[in-house]
Length: 611
Ligand code: O2Y
Ligand code: MN
Image 1 (cartoon, rainbow, N blue to C red):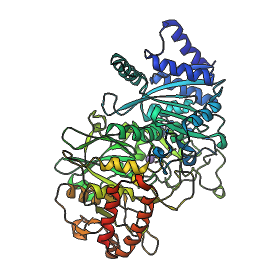
Image 2: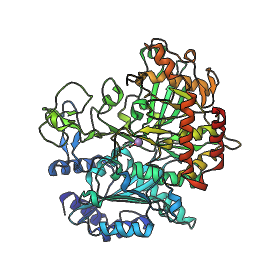
Image 3: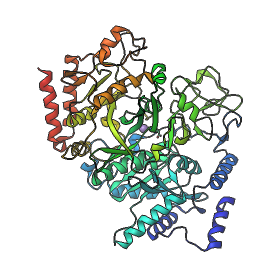
Image 4: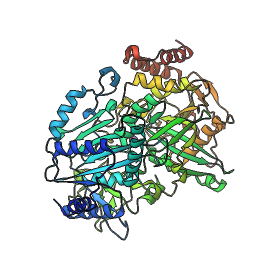
């Protein structure tokens, strides 16, 4: 037993108090301990002292390296196993009782088989290790939209990251216990927190699985210590399990950033936007307005950069919270040009994973600046012939509150009202800069049609186009056909739904160069979107939706070639006919479960496109 665990055991012995007042939680922890056989059990309270002790332990055993305290106070580098550097979609399963409930969009395994497989891996896997019990809350601790979970892990790195990414510790445990006690008083089951069991195991890629049991609100993850595979509050809970719960309970758990746009009159409107992984969500969430906009008084506020939980309010509008408390952002490409707010955010109290190091112990990655690092992400002396210095999926974990554009609205327990929903993809051709769906039903089809070219965030090939409806392909915990039906169900009397838009920042010209400058200039498109939402800006109607004309956008001070603008705002009828043929074939893959309303909507656009 190590010193830290001894200390915790001492405290428990002295007070004689059980670690939790909730019998269902106590029983589950005991059951997991019996299976995994740890040397010690540590209930995380989330305190600074606890964090400092864990960091000290990880510095001693080499899990963390201290970064330059002068330039990056309170910051550390973690190097993951070189075979464990990204999410593993092909090993991520939804284990619903009925295979069709998981849908063709998810690898599926029968729950009994999956439990047996995982429990065999977990059997005795924590011998010689400490088992950490992490109570956490996704969302502001006092929010009715927030949901709690408990992650059990043998990784102190996971504990340190969960402390940044969630509201972790004593307050979360108190909420779990209070909710359990209230349920017990009503005679209901008390284990309604999400149960996540994680072990890094031996990091053998052949013994690595991330299993979701949505009907049992349970996650089992073995064999990876990295990001979304191991920080179970994030993709596993807040998207896969939450999307299932959201469908049952009438809300939406989405892979969306939430950003507030304040106009010169001081009015702030919120946008929720879904983009596939590595399409610049973090950059858009922290956008710096172009010079002219800044001068006029525009401001941008960050609520969240990755996940959005939305539900209808009493007034029929959608209200959203960011269930996360931190950012797990991609480091490569982050610079004072691409995202000054992110760069400012990560100057202190940050855990970096798989970045390179300068000779004086500063974190470094491609795109940061023109210095040459001394060590690559594996810790070898840097040699450019070995590939990039930082791993392309290198990450920073940092509290959202450190972001200069962070807004206290992110702590509003009721959430922020959403004025527009934006879908986007990385499309080199065909898809215009921006268009607005005719109505909610058309907007759901636009979301279902989303596609993007793949990048390094998920294991696999780079640059291949794949469909990624609502950016939820790797994250929807159930059959996409039922998911589209759930989205369509919001279109009902009494709802005041936000308009839906599609953007494409990544259109390329014949010379292969991006046509749109992106970054802060994207605010010009967001301004049009918000004006449309309020019935102000002009547009031209086409079969794919409403497109702005050049005059409808504020392009003052933007140096943009006329031909480029023309391409960005053009509707290519023949190209869209082919696109809709391929979309029809995709929707058919879901068979009879695909809602007729969506097929009809597809048919409506096909007719409008003409034969
Ligand atoms: O979770 C990971 O392992 C990396 S992928 C990721 C991280 C933060 C936010 N989004 C993503 C994503 O793939 O969408
Ligand atoms: Mn994401």
